[in-house]
Length: 184
Image 1 (cartoon, helix red, strand yellow):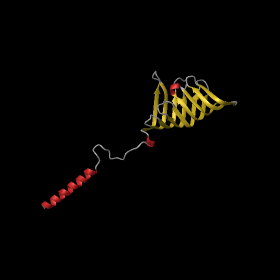
Image 2 (tube, rainbow, N blue to C red):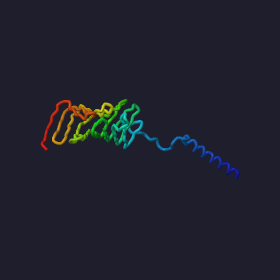
Image 3 (cartoon, helix red, strand yellow):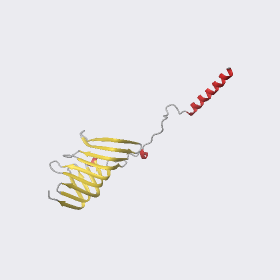
Image 4 (cartoon, one colour):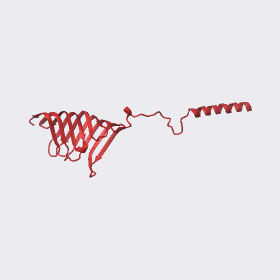
C-alpha cells in the first residue's frame, strides 16, 4: 500500500511539473496576440476629432470611419467628413472615401471622390467635386491641382486646380476655366 501511495505521489509530481513547465510566465496573457492593421502602431474606428482655435472655439470637426496611425506620425484615413467652421460665415463640409496625413504634418490629403459643400450666407449652396484635395487647417485653405467642377443653381464652373480661402470664402480656379450659365 505504501508503495502505491509513493507511485501516485511521483506521478502527481510529474504531472504538476509538466503543467508548470508548459504554462506561460505569470502576467503573460494566454489569449492570442492581437495585431493592428497594416503594421500601424494603433488604429481607431468611428473617431471624431475636434480641433479648437486659439480662442477655444471649434475650428473644425473631423469624423473618420477608420484611421490607422503609424510610428512616423503619419496616418491613413477612411470615410472622412471634415466640417470646417473657423473664419467662415457659414461652414464647409468636405468629404472623401480616403485620405492620409503625411509624417510630421497637420495637412490632410483627401482622395477617392472629394466633395465639398458650402452654403453661402445669403445665397445658394456651392458644391465642388474633384479627385483629390489638401485641407490645410493651419492656413485656412483647401487646394488641389486636379480637375474641379463647382456648381451652384444656374452656374457650373470647371477648371484645373483650385484654391479656397476659408477666411474669405473665396474659391479660385487656376487654369482652363470654363463657365456655363443656365437660366433658372
